[in-house]
Structure formats: structure tokens, C-alpha cells
Length: 149
Image (tube, rainbow, N blue to C red; front, top):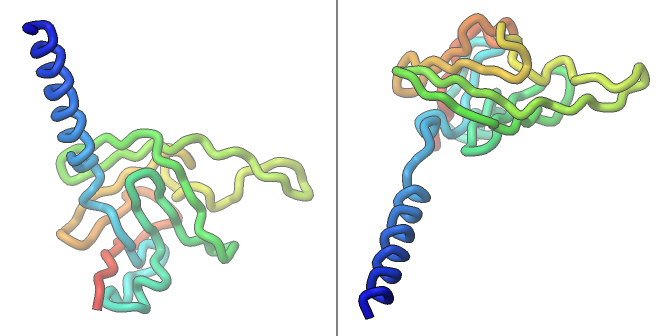
């Protein structure tokens, strides 16, 4: 009887901790959502116009960025995120080269123009709804969060 109770207690304890882990927010949860600006100074941040054409979108597993050379967003799968005070360090899964008439190559705008290369991105929080990608050539301006109507 004791062994059975011990086994049930262990299962409940492990299940409870698993639930807590699933409910815990990832370190980059504060950046989730749609952001405008970055490539250019941020304009309207309220309503459908901003939400319909954001520059960058952060989710739990993917960061999407607008492309100046294509109509589709470049999608980068998040490998790791390290949180610091008011900053995040993203490492992306290395991108696979795409076939072009000139051979297999990475799209020129697959990264963010940052010193760490196309598989790295540092995000710094400047305010409750403003971030920057410091030293990233392709994103010289601050980004502002798109908010609903």
C-alpha cells in the first residue's frame, strides 16, 4: 500500500511541476507581438494599418521580419533566447541556402544586419513599447509595438 501511495505522490509531483513549467512564460514573452519601424522610423502604432504590415513579429518559436526584396516575411526559427536586464540575445537555427540561378545561397535579408551574423539578434528594451536592434545595419531605427484599436 505504501509503495502505491509513494508512486501516486511522485506522479502528482512530477505532473504538477510539468504543468507549472508549461504555464511559465519564456524569457522573451515581453517581446511577443507585432512591431513597426526599425527599417524606417515608426509611424502609426495603433490599429489595423500597423497590425496589417508590421516590420517584425515575435512569437514563442519564430521571429518573422519584413523583406525589402520579397513580399513574404523571412522566418527565423528560435534556437535559444538568453535574457538579461532589459535585453534579449536570440540564436536562430542556421538557415538553409535556397536554390537560385547562381547556385544555392542564403537570401540577402535572412538576418538583421547585426554584428553576430544572420543567426544572431540582440534586442534591447527602451521603453514599455519600444525596442532597438543595436548595431544592426538593416534596422537603424527603434521599433514600436503595434497595439489594437
